[in-house]
Length: 80
Image 1 (cartoon, rainbow, N blue to C red):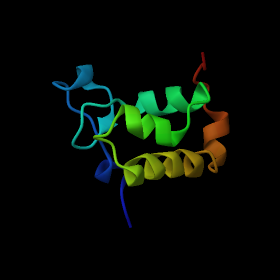
Image 2 (cartoon, rainbow, N blue to C red):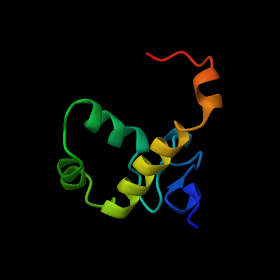
Image 3 (spheres, rainbow, N blue to C red):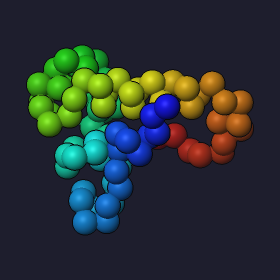
């Protein structure tokens, strides 16, 4: 079974410590920004060719699975 750390890394010397796709300098947040703006995953991959389709799909799948957890809804983190 894959772990999130197989696809994402955090290094204080890369992108100020923001989570990036492993082996790249591409912030994971940029994938979600693209999707939020209605930009397809394929266009995202064209913009960031160092990110693989598998990496992007696995991160999205992890996010979807995370929201299956009831404690996620009880999280008081402010959005926006």
